[in-house]
Length: 166
Image 1: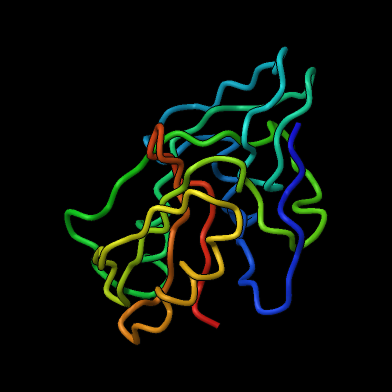
Image 2: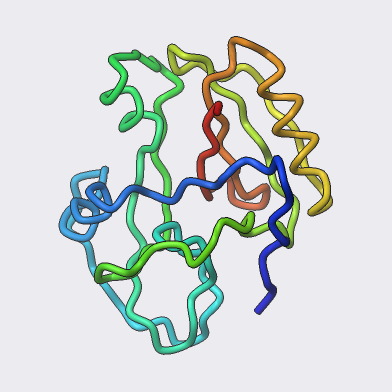
């Protein structure tokens, strides 16, 4: 298991899926399917509830999550065709959330996708090195049109976490 990148001054904070949303997803996911928990025999699944990798033997669930749709519902935005949902791993039962504010899942190529205040994609940046996240966030939020970014896995395109404008 790889440890997260160390916290540095000025680093933006990764936001896990909020606890109230997790409660909903543990019953029915954003595609309307009942959640089916299982035991993770191997470990290593990127958990979006606590922003760490699963340990072998933990009870987890793979659910469909629509982060932009949920953000739009909070803000009144209409993301239109940019609304998407995808698979995310979560603990099958409530967990304490992230243990700290270290930036998670920096051990592989990631995309930092930018979104406007009305939920439209404004572009993105491929981050190939753990030290590249600071620059990607600084670049994204230098644009006053950017409200937040999603950090996504390159290989599957899955949502990992959100970072909002301070």
